[in-house]
Image 1 (cartoon, rainbow, N blue to C red):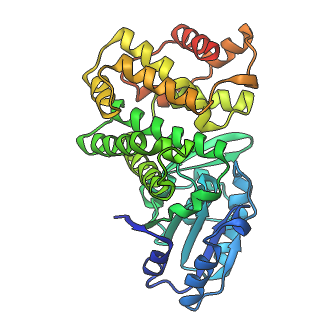
Image 2 (cartoon, rainbow, N blue to C red):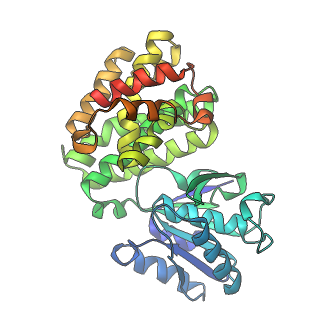
Image 3 (cartoon, rainbow, N blue to C red):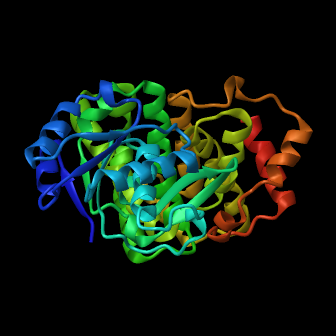
Length: 361
């Protein structure tokens, strides 16, 4: 079972029993305030600092293969991932693929627990990837979703001070990704009492702290950052149980067509989809989510969500100009796996109507 540790000093605990460490980190590494602490903790167990960072923001399968090769040549028994979702995804894939047969496509081989220790230190507060069984890599230009229970990191080390240096727009996108995940997990057909409690806690933390974290209201920036990082982790734990739903399914093509960052895209999709679902079925969970947000009704909650987006200046802006052919492309592209988790079915003609509303807001 995963252990979640608070503060970068806890990395020493996570490294207990490790002999040699393979550090997976992205291009932000030289600018991270925790870099020295991570290297010191690794050196403290007598291990050299062996870095792998030869991958991009949307990691290619070929980059993962290079990481597997370097990991196997290193003699390491532990992987430490430091960074955003891409770093953690690459580290998860290296762990999963490192005992497979070289020269044969790893994606087609059976997935088994390799026993390699994996420690994740997130530097954003959005996906909660440090606590999920999911990873992504791109093969022949196509996104490959990789899922296995063994790639949930053994330890997640949460250090909120890393959020201080994030660009404001990235903070906005990532907090909204976490918020959407918490909401979607709650209404997912796969929801459980445990996942709903995780969602409730995440939503409560976001609602209580987003203004201080994003807008600088009421001071308390350090405590707000700690709360938002915890909220993102809780949302990740919830999604690990339930998977995402329609807003995520609708968001992916917005990202690929317009270059719209994921958290921004999914947050644009959620209120229109929630309204559509309300028009078809007023599920009890919609009211429960509204109450967790501090709203009286689902309609009030949707208005509150849109108000948050407006305060953060997260609209479509110059990302998009309406074209009918683009609407048709979007409507036909929705991920059916994500839609299967949605509590209200959405047909392709209904998806076109929803996209039309999303893009007109």
